[in-house]
Image (tube, rainbow over all chains, first blue to last red; front, side, top):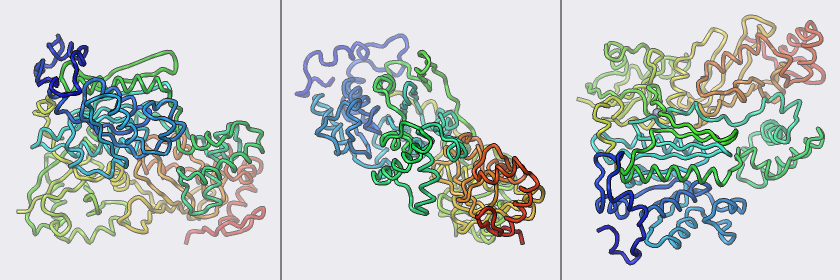
Length: 426
Length: 178
Ligand SMILES: [Zn+2]
């Protein structure tokens, strides 16, 4: 069963890839089982999810399909814009306005026989844990920090100590002009996306007084229009950067200001770029990063070679510089750090009693803990108004506020990380 | 597929499932419950269940703004601390670094924001603006101009503005502390 049975297969189709899969190499993982077993896993069993079908996503989908992954799912919430066509090579002018996920899936299936690409046109947040549980691997080619934080936290939360398959390696690629990074995240085992949040490049923000008084760049005029003029003129109306009418208003307002200060270069597309924080995408940077993500996916899926540990950085802005290092997991990471404690208490225990117990415990050394559940505050030590608002809870029974097996987040200044409590009742 | 699970054997501490509280929510809880609030600062939560929207009142006990009570709205979004909290002064006040719409010129709120900063750093920064208004980063140009050229007159304008007076055709809010 090495795939030759299917009508889509022909002799020598995987000749080159099989050079790697047919025999172990000096650095292959001890668990590597060369030959049919690994080929069967890659080609008939492995299910991989690609998040994003844009610049990186198109490259990733093509690479995966050509390296032998056959059950690929793709999620993207966007539709194709004419400006995507220069680098998002799975799309054609006739596709403008259609969902990226669907078009990308159709293109890859037409081009690479035997590959099944299942698209979902929508948000990653629409899907639940059961959906993510079905995959062996997840690759992200996203341009949004928020979406990455979400999928990272979701995959970390998915890890269940009783189910080994619940641990889904996450390969995250990102590019910004000539810069990019690829990383392998093993949720709860290695450093996660949230652990490295402070390493991110900041969005360019200009001092507000420069925007207000001494604009010199077209970007200053656009920020003036969006940050200062929009709220002043439109009051509580929220700026929707996807609404062309809103962008037009900003463009006109910014143009007027630019004329006043003799600044050139305010255009409709620059306006959209600045307010949506679009960084110019370079097709070849996307290609490098996508290729490196897919190599890692291949190595992880087949254990045919050592995989990236765990952060690869490419800096092409001043010459070419690349650096690979192990980013360390942070104890105080709100997603993967901290500790989880199981506690079993009587149904009659009050919140006050629970806090007293936490403070007395030698193993956690906690002073002044504040407690919450994912949906409500239970007791906050500060600021005074919240302390007062949550104080009545001290007298209430924990069992009235938290269900059996429910979880609480504990923070305290004496605690460098956050603590999760899972409460069961006796 | 690589056997990651074996790497977890001696890793019991972090191996349990975490509650579904968002990272932003945990950070805000940590920031808020560890605030070191001096007597000159007070928070108000219109809805105590909503930690992401609240106001801060600063009542400076020294400097030229002593005697005033200055209110700021804080709006924190789910991308905190990647993005800074959005802060506005909700009153019309006479200050070189705050415009009549309530926009505040404070570097850590925009160009110098970093995820390692927290709500406490922001509050300390705001309080500092009342101790050391700065004519170099003007948002209210008239006020900055006055501070630079005629400090005495600026002081008089600050006192009058805090009582709700008109200065150069602008009526300021009465912000005197009770
Ligand atoms: Zn982490």
